[in-house]
Length: 254
Image (cartoon, rainbow, N blue to C red; front, side, top):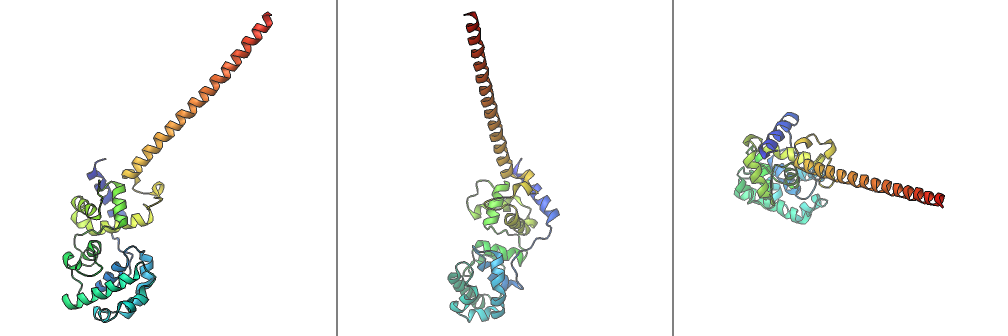
């Protein structure tokens, strides 16, 4: 199947079955989503949603967070991954919003990446979710699933994946395609044990096609070896019977 066909099937399926996917991070405004996405690096959305209510309740504005300390913020996020670094990033991010962006979350991806704790992935999430810009964030789920399906080829970095997806996906689907890939990777196309047998898009998935072809070949080889073994066993039995008959014939002549 050609790559363009896979993209067409991918967009057609998810446009029909998941027309309005959304992030599973809980937030009430752009500032809160920015905090949540920074915290979500190498951590689960479920964990982030457990810690952010108290954090959001304490720091309702960039000014309040900027006036805090990383030690204080740490007490609210101690259960997430890398809490020390993330606490410093959050305070630094809030200070920069206040000092350079009039306490508003910027929409420009370059400006977003100037904020502490904000890389290209986080910037693309904010740009697409909050500002509805044609950007696609590449996290571990997007990286893995896009490669398995066959949407990307030899893409060894998140940026390479982003470039290929941006090239082939219709511009208006870039933001929601991020959610399609994440949710599919989170619940079906798992990292260690993908649920290929129940996957609704396995019929155009390159990973499924390759693995099933390999499995079929291995099964055929095993069946061939089994038949050869049975034939060898049958031949041996016939030789034994033939020798016994010959021996009986000789004994009778004597």
